[in-house]
Image 1 (cartoon, one colour):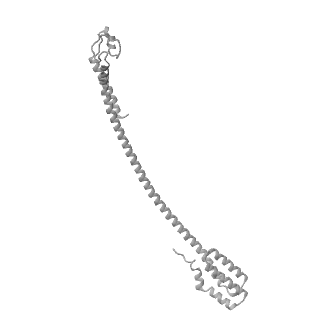
Image 2 (tube, one colour; image 1 turned 45 degrees about the vertical axis):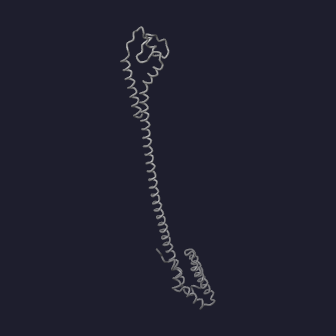
Image 3 (cartoon, rainbow, N blue to C red; image 1 turned 135 degrees about the vertical axis):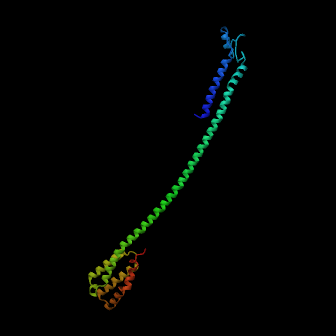
Length: 242
């Protein structure tokens, strides 16, 4: 319950108590034989007599009764008009305070949303950097793993090319070279130059086996497996870049 309303009730009760005390203090004694006439004098209609009494209300006079009631309740009405004004002022102040609190709460929510947005953006950037780093690490590890396998295949091909003519001209060597070529297709996928080089090795080796033109074939074989050409074919795949 609001304070102005409580004050209004207290003042209203105090007013009626004071008015009652004042009335009791000013009412003249009424003889017992005229008590009914005295009571009837306060009624707007009734059988009042010439000997009826009344301290504040003139007998059979409605205007006087109206003036009496107006005078009685006018201070109360004015009091409650003031109380109503204070109550409305307090409600308006409470409304403004509540609106101010709501506005502050909304501002806090906006600031919190902005902070969350910045936090999410930072987290997103961190996660993106972590994902990129993980990707780089994955490819580095994969390249290292592939490097070991490629180096192993490189050494196998190197050892194969170091076989003498008699060994190269056999059927097992033919199968070994086909097997090495298949491994090249798998471990060096996409390198067309290396594919053609392996294909030239197979063609030249087959000529050696068929003994079509031994001197020319040996010269061609020697050119294919020369140190510079051999190294050039594998250099790109056997070099680790940061």
